[in-house]
Image (cartoon, rainbow, N blue to C red):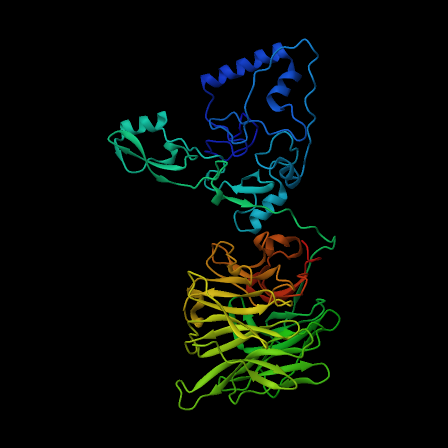
Length: 594
């Protein structure tokens, strides 16, 4: 439905224009009189003088936006004055500052809807792309945008969602009155009668319309803030086109997964296994190290067939992971080109794994089990820190907790992060994320309501930022049945829920940039489908499949990011292709800025 006021194309059924706020109902007699008066003004004052009076106030600098002529007043509308005849020549209107970029326009306008000073597309592609990447809407769906406090905000119309200024009038209009005359006792008056722009719910009581509640909160400019998303300007590009590399499985396996990447993106580690889609046979895992020049290199074994690689040092020379030793038991390893795969030892029980490594490969984080004779359940598991000089050192647990696991280590090896638990395997319930340093020991990061537990997964290279999971005390083996969220922790913000792409679950592993400004992982859409994401404080969560769609082959979807280079340029994880094919990937985004 096209707006007669500004020409904006609105979705079918809309009652108010999403651009200027004007009513889309047929014009009334009063509006016809207004047109007639305007024509008289054109004849008596001249086109130039009338436009100057209507659209531009005599003030230096950027002129204010015109007041919309719809049924609702605009908060930007200023006082009006009647032009008077003057014997002197009519001054020319103040020249317009014209913009084609929404962010430059809003920086100048401060607040308001686009007017004649904006000459760019009515539906700017960067704004649409941001809404799609946030999971707010699908490609091709209608939206609108405006300026607020110098920034760009956008709203998706959806099922005729009110992206215009809301009707805050408490006095019933004629349609409400007539409806209640015909339906004197109705608990809810349909929006088709009240108007989709109302902020209230209405009912009929003894034939009279009454307000029963509020549909939306309203901001100072008359809009529903929960429907509007801030859209940061697009990040500058390096000019290098993004490139996706799918890493083929090796050792006769059908699928592959990448878990670690070197700082320069030239070394990727992970494992191959027999897999298709969500069906994976972990009994067939085989660790690899991949380079562009040498392809996939099998890391060998320590007498067993089942191996996996979790992480790689910054220079790509040290790989850490685990290998299966039978009877549902495994041990940690460290691999280098010179010495191959070496066993790191245990704390006396063959349940131990190496999960992360420092930038220079000298410090390894993980966990190891120990026996506890005379203490139920007869065993314990502790976070460990390994160095070649000291071997495995258990870090204990937080006071009041029984067990702990270390998942991440800082670039210099001085800070480790993980989780501590009260409940035994496999539940690991009542968990709390922690940070460990030699100077301060293990410090808990707490929890964040409404989640009952937290678990840290990685720490940024500079040690300022921790990422992990927020969840309730559900069995780890049944997480698919329960909601959970990724968090980002900093000393000044505490635990921050990163949200989702529309579903109930978000997960992270080791993918956080050097300074903690970017986080990557996977999140569910409202359909429960998993998508790889990027999160920043400024832009929130965005779908990598949208941001880098030009680099992704048809039929393939990036499902998860496991690790990233310190600058965020190189991302690794796994993708799903036609027929459920599972492939490790290396995504070169072209730049840390995109």
